Amino acid sequence: MTDVITASARTLEHRDIDADFEHLREIMTGWSFRKSTGLGGEQPYYIYDYPATQELEVQEHIPTLVNQLQTMTPSDAPGDYAPKVLVMDLYHEVLEMIKQRQVLNRVLNNEQRMHTRMSNSAASDRFLKLLDNMVYGDGANLAEFMNAQYDEKKAQDEADIVFITGVGSVYPYVRAHTLLENLQGRIDDCPLVLFYPGTYATRSNTGSTMSLFSLIDTDNYYRARNLREMTPKR
Image 1 (spheres, rainbow, N blue to C red):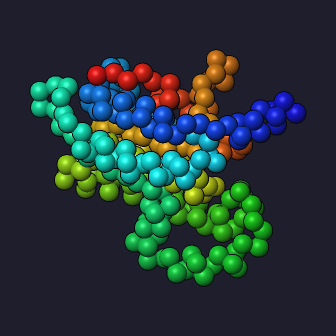
Image 2: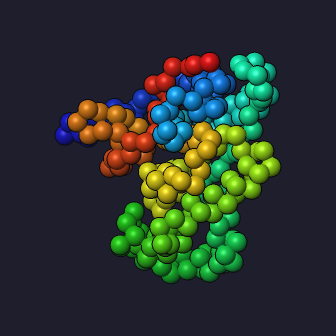
């Protein structure tokens, strides 16, 4: 019962998104964040978690933050410059991946027939299993697809920071913690920020956990820093 009450309380949380994004801007305009200094060799992965009920507010703020970063006045160090931000929306990424494989029509035609039993488990929902196989395949189809786009943009100097959005739109066939694990070693030479509609928390007894919408069972993930808990540095 306590867990249910705690989860329900989290869903009623309301935050000042304006203040949150001002905090993000202060962090991301800092030289240490953009150059990934002081991480001790760890990958520069970050999570901004927020109440799922405020998804639209967050989506409205992201383009403004991107513009603020890309038009900032560099001043922290010699050779500093305004960073280019690559925004990767997971729903569009999955859709584009399926289109490029020329199987989108087959997927759409099979949806009604295969959705005989809807579930959030690929073991019982045949259509979900189809999507799951396409997204992960041998383990990292989506991560490889995103990495190819990142490499292309990086070669064009258009990916100094990566934003990943759309997490809620691709549940349950894309799990954020699994995607981040698969991206390690692929996108790891610039800051990567996951916008997460849920709870990312660090506890002494369980370590770091992710709970989508603050209601779905938690997944362990410990390699990312929580942006809300960070202090801006120059």
